[in-house]
Image (tube, rainbow, N blue to C red; front, side, top):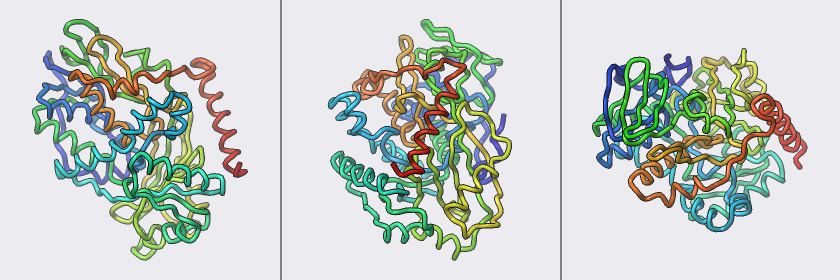
Length: 425
């Protein structure tokens, strides 16, 4: 399997291809999945001197890590005040202390390994109603309490200076947020793993895992024997490999387009300061400019990760509602990809067996959370599990309705929240 026909694949940096696994190899740690969770885990561990083998079923960055909107969004899919209400003050304290760390890890990786991935600082949460604006005012106060003082509340005049659209009543600018080319970030991290002695095998789908001492991870062409195993496949992990992970998550699809390159004047009129944007709706839209002045626009969710027949037809009405001045603009790329949703919208960190770790379910905050996850998994594997356990201790329930009804019931719930957004209540 190769990358989908996306803007990211078309503009990926030159990079080496990694071999297919053939024969038997041994290592300290076997990582299953070549997206951000697996890459982050492998890089932290190779930096610490561990012998790491990473197995990727397709190519590095094949899944959500190489297809997403490219936005570095801080915190979690649930606000820290909700976390405190649900899980208590101690959980909120621990998770709050980490809510901006994922973005810092990304910046460190880019600087340390000179990764060329079009990094641009600044992300905006855009409000479409007075209710959403009140939420952003509260969010600013909470985030400042946890140490982010790089925030600017935007009134209607301020948001018009940032976005060339009449839709928004205000917003919150986070200068510790950012946007970037996610596939090039993934490829740069993979190269850093190689430089530290890690081994990456592409086109090496795992066919089975046998727990023991050592653990045995098999592919069509070979076998890895390892002291530790990390499951990092997220929405692209084959369910039969570890049913305990599949039972409490739901794959979902998101769609993205990129326009043809825009003139400098037109691009500047849309996003004068080149910040990325996501709105505050439950089913949110997100957009930004690419390095070559295309508008990249995504939005909506397809529950159950079905592949839409016409991505462009789904996205064009959303884009034109935001930027009617782009009527007639050509779309050069349109693609979809899957992310993994949990019922609580909080990530699932797990110890499955002795020496076997897993993380999944970023619920839309994958770029930053996956990088934090890699650090926490590496800490736990090395014997310091306090921060890993702060996540692993969170309860996770299965979606209602079982495997047959979880998709329609989730879609009905989402439709209710989308109606509230439209009504501004």
